Image (cartoon, rainbow, N blue to C red; front, side, top):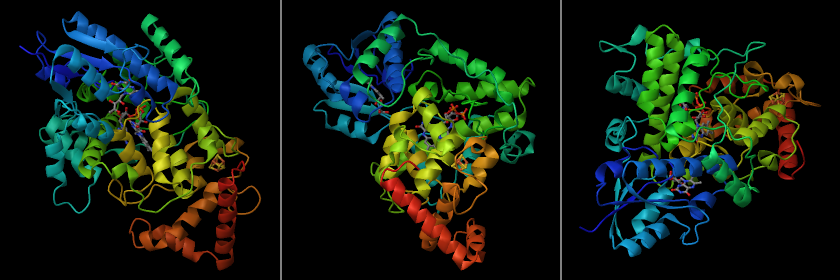
Length: 509
Ligand code: FAD
Ligand code: DLZ
Ligand code: SF4
């Protein structure tokens, strides 16, 4: 019998991934490859490359142990063809296989590249999600607007998570109004679980240092888990130490506590070391045993079976052009401060600094600091998208693009969100401790030392009046703007303009 090739990509490290489930261990050949094309289509953070290569190597070893015939190419393997299609062709030639079983990749770029490979390539749907493509399409069909909340309720019903005989646990679907507390003084925790690199990871770190040392981001210390056992321990640690306060402080930001009560499990979920349902069940169990309150557990489960699934549904529904959308026609280049260039804005400096060191920032830092600023400053969303895809350890286009292009930059014209996530400095001041040591003053609205968010916020609303003034959720903002004295409005617009000119000229702002 002629063997078939079974492709397993670096973010498909799950033993029952669709392609492996379909394959025959006794005759098929598993192909896994560290390739330059995947490692360089954006300038990934070195920690991201290290996580993927180390986890791939360990997963390949586990498959071999389990009796699979695995052909693994390391990046410096001299026969390495340099791309996933190239590696498939190389192994097809060597083995005589002409059929490939693959699991659909998480990026259109690679889905299209696999379609072009001159072999019979079957791309099976990735079953590691609660909703299939067909289910999401059916749900979206005929709706004027796609809103996460309604989709989420269906996912609760489907999974039975936090359900009480057909009704939501506690009587309500969503406990968000009990969340979003501002940070209190002295609010810190011991942080996520860190792991000491083992020999495999150390070898990968040396490779990444040598080949990708110039990319934005510090590689060491490297503390991420690189196998399923480690990811499970990280999950258990989160459930015990942070989940109980996850809800309350979900939106809080502290300069000296980069993680607060967040889980730091997105890299493990996204590369296949953890399963979303197992994660949600672990959280639900903590609620049932009285170890975590309902607002925390519901909020956490909503992020996973609500937001994560919804975001994925949008990516595949909207098609390959989605990441290039630019509904607001924003054209300014991405400022150097995103790559660590000097800035006097402490919130941005801190968010970028932690991104460089951890390859991680939590949701509100991504949305309301770096994302908010890019949107207010009118940065080209394609450049913003490329930045997020490069710098975060959990970034794969299926999840990154709808969050960045859609939720954060409103460049999809309102598919993901009904209104843009914009705010003045006031929101950042309320939810963080960034402002207290900033060069700018968050309470100053114009003139010397005025917080740039305060200027840019109004300038954004003014610039996009035609699109947003009739949005019922934004009427209040326009009324406030319209009630200001004309001279004050002129001053704000002129100062915002000066600020943006300085930003574009590369002056430190
Ligand atoms: P927690 O806050 O502890 O949440 C638990 C889990 O919920 C996460 O691990 C994640 O799997 C899921 N989740 C929460 N919010 C979202 C969301 N909006 N979309 C999808 N899943 C969600 N998430 C990624 O996984 N990859 C990305 O590339 C990514 N890019 C983003 C870009 C922007 C501009 C924004 C605003 C958000 C982005 N997110 C992305 C969503 C979110 O910020 C991260 O999932 C979260 O910060 C991961 O950290 P955590 O595990 O500590 O999450
Ligand atoms: C992100 C990434 C990197 C850096 N390197 C590899 C690699 O060498 N080999 C591989 O199979 N996958 C890698 N990946 C993950 C892929 O880019 C990912 O599968 C696609 O982007 C689709 O989500
Ligand atoms: Fe950011 Fe403005 Fe606060 Fe400074 S004052 S940290 S720029 S919000």
